[in-house]
Length: 307
Image 1 (cartoon, rainbow, N blue to C red):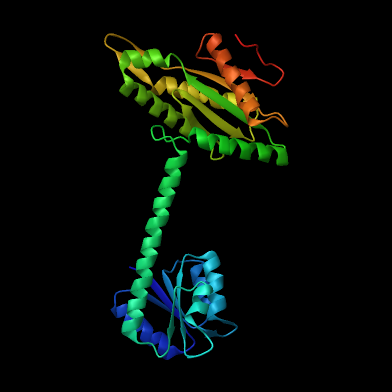
Image 2: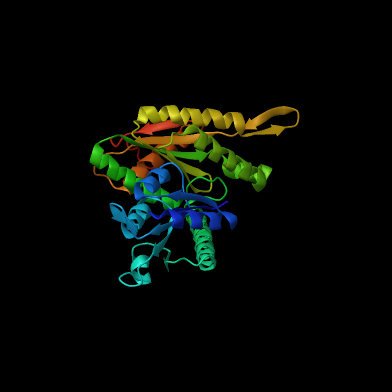
């Protein structure tokens, strides 16, 4: 049921509008002053507020401005003055509609229904935009963030490092022998492993951490306010959880375990995102070179030569 309120110092107007809109099927609330409305909105939302212009200590336009800055409530302004105020003024102040007194109830009901309809369309549009935004930054298979969003976020985290001096650690992860795995068990089973790893990464991170799928079997994790040694704990947890969850049973044999090669590095003041990522990639490749299913840590002073 839609929640509508009226604020008016005239009791007869409050009562008559409240009674009529209650009979029309709305949940109604009546207030005699602006502070009463604002106090209520701090606790409960309202879909529409109907307000008179003259109010003690303020007016309907100022109240509209205050409410629109903090709350998702549509405003219909009433006035008993036939001049001095206009529809354009009310709309410019943030109101959704403007009516003159004495109120014709049938017209008020039509205006309320129109505002509610537009409110519904706006909510649908905002939800659609939210979904499109989510799709634009999310890998559809694993539900981790995608490569595009990764480069957006890494610059933000580097900026935060430069402002506050807190450590920033980057982790690159690659599923070992994934091409052979796909060729052996098929892409559907391969997708299951990718989905499982996405869930393992998500479940292993704090709220401030973010996981990304860079493409194929490569993943990365940004760990703000985290040193490399602290990142190592996260990497070990991800490795362990993936071994436990991403297993392929063999008839009469031990199940095949999916493993990860992981590289970890910590951001260095003044370096660009490409150098930061490149060092983490070198650390991950070092894990591959050393035998896979390993975690390697590199600082800026420990860059290995290309093989």
